[in-house]
Image (cartoon, rainbow, N blue to C red; front, side, top):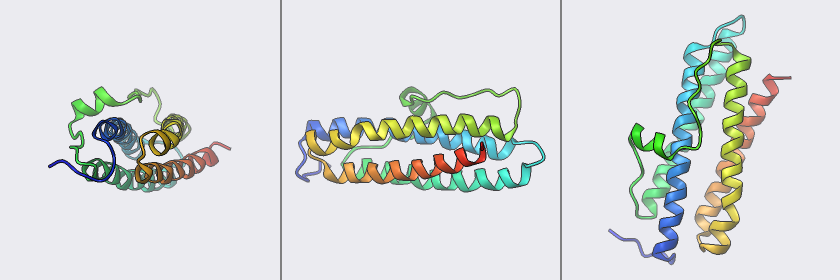
Length: 157
């Protein structure tokens, strides 16, 4: 059913396309964070195991909220691994060592990539596409990713 919420149909399509790409990035980052949680090794194993768990739990909530925003705008959220891999800007990483600094650096780069993706759409969604709700929504997501990136960065000091 088509939604009538004061945003032009072609604008909603552009917004939901961007949100679908974001959802794919969030899913790939979630999967990589799960990988770090499951496979981290070293003398800091237990602390990093718990840390990565807290991060993937946050990402799980973010993914759900992005998918629900897409549905709120009247479109279907991508929901297959094939879709996610076609839409994402992130890459899967094959590590030779499963140590926490390596995982943290990889995850930090992905968070920063998502932050830049979001930052580049805040004004676009509000000013050009007239969707202040989604602009506000992704501003909040950007702040969440900034905090998660800060937490990762702090482990590298």
